[in-house]
Amino acid sequence: MPAPQHLRNEDNKPDRIIKAALEVFAEHGLHGTPVPPIARKAGVGVGTLYRYFENKEALVNAVFRDTKQRLKDHLTDGVDLNEPSRALFNELWDRLTGFARQNPAAFRFLEMQDHHAYLDNDSWQIERSLLVPMGMMILQGQQNGLLNPQLRADIAIALFWGGFVGIFKAEAQGYLTIGDSDLLTARDACWQAIRHHPKSEGITQ
Amino acid sequence: MPAPQHLRNEDNKPDRIIKAALEVFAEHGLHGTPVPPIARKAGVGVGTLYRYFENKEALVNAVFRDTKQRLKDHLTDGVDLNEPSRALFNELWDRLTGFARQNPAAFRFLEMQDHHAYLDNDSWQIERSLLVPMGMMILQGQQNGLLNPQLRADIAIALFWGGFVGIFKAEAQGYLTIGDSDLLTARDACWQAIRHHPKSEGITQ
DNA sequence: GGGTCCGGAATGAATGTTCATTCAGGTTGC
DNA sequence: GCAACCTGAATGAACATTCATTCCGGACCC
Image: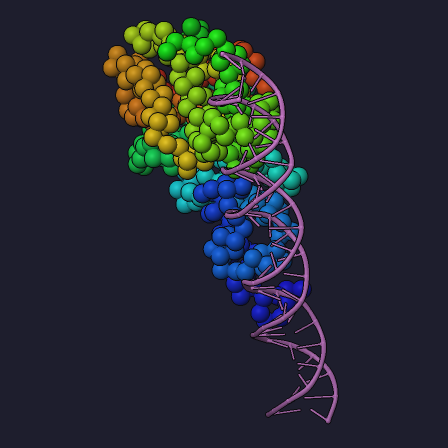
């Protein structure tokens, strides 16, 4: 069944709805946004929205999955996980940066806190799968001695990801504006956080 | 007017309400939580709640101010901003850690995204004032050459804060469990992110 | 017994969801 | 080729529910 009839994907309503929902959710959160504005923004009747999504919760899950999947694709498509650690790190950072810059609403939406209350299984799975490439990068770096072996991989990811998000969140909230060179400096700083510093063993205290 | 009569602060309802509200908001967000559950959790009638807070929004602002103020106090009370950079950094980190451990709900609440929609002026002021001690620490460290001079202070704060939050957020979401020694390793990693690395100038790329 | 405080049922506005109706396009019968 | 008919997507007004806020009867002090 290649393309059902001639018409069909003329405008693809579910996609339009998901896109519209993403923007409104990113702005006001799930509970902060009524359904009608979403429909209006998508150029669709409210009833139509319910033809494609069982209820509001199913819609957020669709938005979440779609967005997370796009982030994952953007992060991993065609990436060579065997590049040297630092190059791989830079590559991931650049891709993250690119995504955050091109999809501010997506990024903002993904970083909302209350997702856990309503995510279904499929959404969770995508959520987790995003961590894979970052974990690979860390482990590989630790094996070849470039990354701090004492830093647990999951903590390294949380630190790296948290720092990255922190910068873009601060920018989104108006605390700062970041130029491209600032981003490079920040990237290097993140790298310093996770890399191996052989000389200084006893820096604690 | 020292203490109005004998009774009065027998149990202090506003405080109980704020405390209850904090926990429920931290769990479901402002728009995700109805008022009655807050009242119930505070052991108070809904009407009573409205005796002390003009409306729901005023309540969130009170919660926000109270929480942020407590964090700020916990972070700055009796701290000597002239300690050497690394010691000051450790001190701040320890205090942050302590606060996050003792008040998980507070921390979770403060990191919610949609605050900006309803914060009033007073709340904003407290919000900003929290950045002061961290900014001091960065600037002082840069002046005495210990911290990376190329990293803008506001970005350094965002990175440091983001990394810190990232770890606790990951733990709150069940992605990891952190022991005390892991926290120390993470602290050192954060320090590496912002400190000056004189040897390696051209690490970019 | 007058004043203050409290509680939670009552109220009405806002919001998620449904469903009777419309309508565009395709199909059938001539 | 042209009606009459059929189909199912689309719609938005109507409905049911949820929720913020009010308000009045009662409790508790002086």
